[in-house]
Image (cartoon, rainbow, N blue to C red; front, side, top):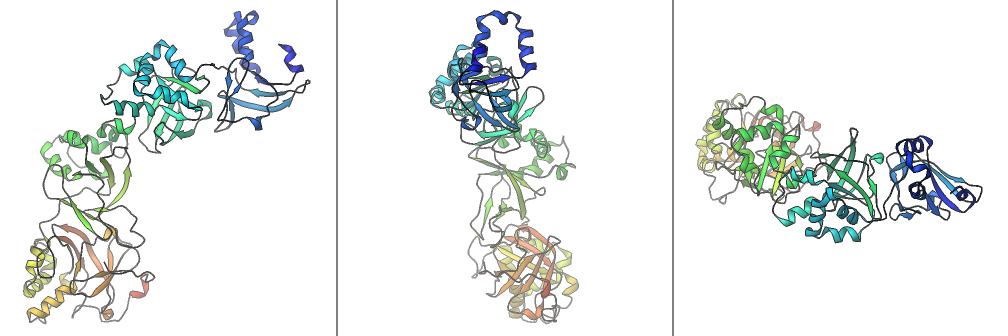
Length: 543
């Protein structure tokens, strides 16, 4: 075949070390027809500079297909790195140098799977699910092909649709050569997928850019076929949607402790079920919880498993989410209007820090910043239980609004309406003797009541108006210490007031405590004294 250099051919020449290795391991090839077949896999009739090669369609050598693809460090020819390109031959042809000897097969991916006894389970499943025909219609693919032994190690779901979706996770767009990793493409379900080399023969598959990855071991070198790359693997890739929720959570460092405690609490079945939202606190918040006290664990963790998924209230609104184990529902609120409006909702006024997408249509896994406790009984009970708010509690009794804070029902509220109570602490509200009539006390208390549930954790850093119970408005903005700053809009002489504590959730609203009252003798009388430090650049309609 030495005359190849004298004609118009494209020749992919393996580097000397690869050729020497081939001859050492196959001494019998030197004078056999097999060597002609192998060499023929490196020769293409005609002149093909690299610029004319495409990753979507192979060119045919004298022995089989040749795919040129782009890897992480450069171009690959049949998964072998391209070392040099477009060197002319004496006869007008062109030479490209590759790192290794090229191998390929004229058959399609499906034909190769069908002809290999160790892949008979996969071949049968491809036919049963209709994916065999789909694969035959497509080109430029990678098929991770689990061996029969790999399928024997797992329990596949009985549902035919689920089986098909699991197999789709083994099909990736493009030729994902191990020498070209890290790389990525879309799987057979249309989901973005990343791949990374792992050890000497491992490949880590990360579906949908998640942390919930699967690492599979290659059973041997990949085989280039007419329709793509076949990689035989010793494990079945189980995507997150096909794995029990707690199994996935155990694999992730941030949620492993939570999954462990749920199992110890006897809540595995609920956590692994459908139509559920799991609220995952940070591991450090769970470090002090006992591993063995099932009753105690169940009580603490039950509020973190909510019935239903897709819990998102209307903008500016709120809803109640019921724990699967019963008990008091948890408050889910939308962030404040404005820059924060597109953020995730808050649960018990705790911000949702992120979401793990398991690709399960009726299961949500949300990361939260703390261990949750159920709501207190009601605003009145919460107020009366706080000694530092006793003076304001007396004002509430004088106002005749105790029933409003207790039951939440009055001529001013509809059933289910929520309130936010801004209660000044005792040191700033020493003397309430001036509230000598029910009307004066009621007017004073209404100034400190906001319609709706407002959480400090969901506020904007800009002053945003809210509607008070008395019909007036006040402005609130988040502060750097995690609290909030409050400014009555129609009594600016009061000045800005900071919260002392925030976000005590009750069955009918939210309680915040203030350093001083918003009006009256204890209020600041220096007009706009500390308002200049606030960001007044954004005003929106009151909610």
